[in-house]
Length: 147
Image 1: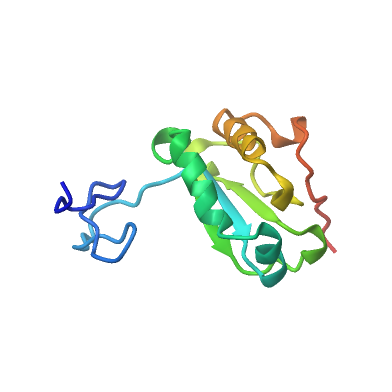
Image 2: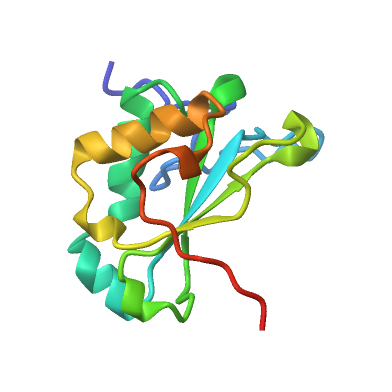
């Protein structure tokens, strides 16, 4: 079993030393779309507040909840600094409205997520997977204001 090739979520064999990079690139293979895309601030202050690799931790929770594939897929990506350091642990949530129609949680900013327990993250992921508005819950959002 140790010699079995690693297969990514798209069904491609993974290149040695990588988590998901396909060994052979197929330019005609479609990308795997997602319902929700979460950008985790990985700027100096937020990364320090998270105390570790928050993106990988969140991906593990998402996989455990079976939200890493299919119509409810949640994708997590590290971002650079948002310039919102006073809110530490900032995440930005985008929903794939192009393929899923209007969804209530597009462009939501949450603050102080470095204080979330695993159960709080699971609650957020459940809300996102069921199209429940985040604004209807106890999550601390950053008010958006255009200057």
